[in-house]
Length: 283
Image 1 (cartoon, rainbow, N blue to C red):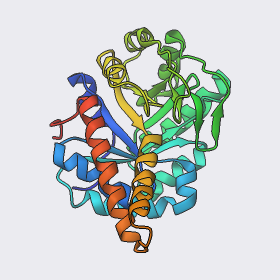
Image 2 (cartoon, rainbow, N blue to C red):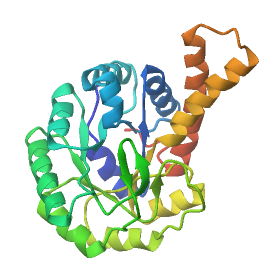
Image 3 (cartoon, rainbow, N blue to C red):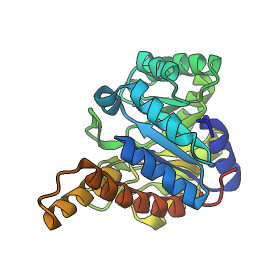
């Protein structure tokens, strides 16, 4: 089916008490793997690309690949700009065919974050494209964005932020981090419940790669409607190629590397969909 927006997906997840898995993709093979997993499990799915990924391949290239593969699937597929770092990039993504965008002003002070998020949300609404924003800082490194320390989202600020910006979903900080964890993360899961009580829009959890399954499940039960997975997919894809080359060092056909990479990513995505509770939720 054609690409769909994330808005109805996330509202359905909010009502149903589950989360939609959102998976960062870097190439055609990862797109095929993620959609293949969704198709097998009858799950709605969100494909994501970051600014550095689209700089590598262009917005138009990823939009074309995603649209072509979604068109062959019977489950709803959304293409989302993850961590959009400017209003201009978000608008370019919409014009290229993305069906959801994020504006990440979390590195700005509160009023400036509100200003850029509101501007993007208003433009998105005019195009009927949902807009995710972020309040609070998720630690670690995602793309070229790096947070030196975690600053968890304040529920009262979240309420004001959503009301003043009109964003359709909100990424919150509760102690997660981008990339792999160096130690055991300390998550303020109670904060998810408090923010859920304060705001009406679906909540998003970034930095889920490496979290324990039970932690993700609890966050979903407390109100998270979208869970982002990125680093572990990249690692799975690359590690599969390394293992093939270790077994068969004379391999030179890129398709063989792509096949093992797809298989590894697909199995990982199926596992994460089970954890998010979105299996069988495609409508």
